[in-house]
Length: 413
Image 1 (cartoon, one colour):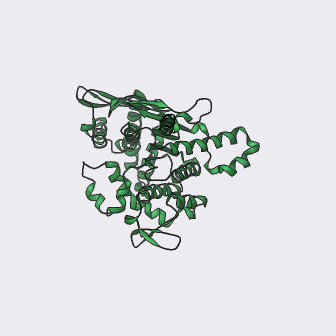
Image 2 (image 1 turned 90 degrees about the horizontal axis):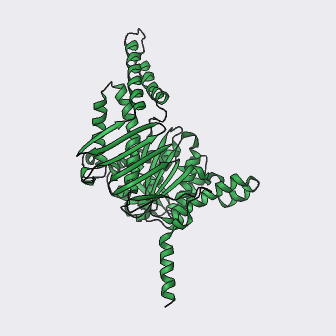
Image 3 (image 1 turned 30 degrees about the vertical axis):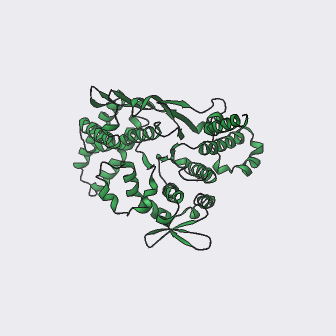
């Protein structure tokens, strides 16, 4: 069980979330979707810092100071409320709290995490001391093996504490089409820029390498490539002489910087998702995707949902987790269809082949794996029906319903 409770932070009055394998946060702009996703990213990033704290034999105060610096980087003070706030993250029996009390920020950890940290730190120090007194020739390799054991020690003492591989695909990623790669090292120290966008930009070139070396067409699932083409409007992406090129069916080539806004926004997401599929073993990966629908047609948005579902199923053994922030009813409806197909396949196995003709098996999702929340006016509402596990239909396109109702009233005049 994984939860976040937010009280009086960044415009959020009081919200509670339970996270599952696939998570969708929807709502109008400024409702807290992005803040919630970034808070989850922040808390999960603490665990590798705990591991590093053990390996360097640093103090808990040093660990706290590092978290304060990171929290201020992700959430600058000008985004804080005037009063106190509290954000609590819980996974299994582990709890981490960040709060502002009387103008000061503080961190607190559950007693079991404190004890686990102290115990593993002591064990690591003892093992390292034995190693330093050892007469083995290859102590370097032994030290590497000992560091690898730290993660297992932590997991044994505090189940749920993992070294997560986190990937944040931010909104506004279309700017990457027009910014030189080497500029991100310069921008990294600029506190006025979104640190998530800067970090993604720095890694983007590496993600492109995976695409050039192992594009979706080379994976076991050939359908990936066809879905990608549908999202990009029928074109193919290729790297030529360190340039991003989109190639049309007639071999007409367009530099990404001159492509449509939809293509500029979609390509970084596609390249990042391809990277997830290309790495053979990527345990405990978490991918955050802001506004996957940006500038895309409803058909392309449906294809985005298909792509993410296939990726999730393709990496099922790696414990992949997906967090999506969106304003699009089409994204919700597309995922709902994938859930319904998975539900029907489970309840009517004799008709599995007929269901797969409509929604391929590799895109079907088991309802219990997904959760969705609507955020508005500082509060959250779960959108999952308990009985079916599907997304509440009345929430899927309330704006369209309002528009239709308004038109009906006009027609009555």
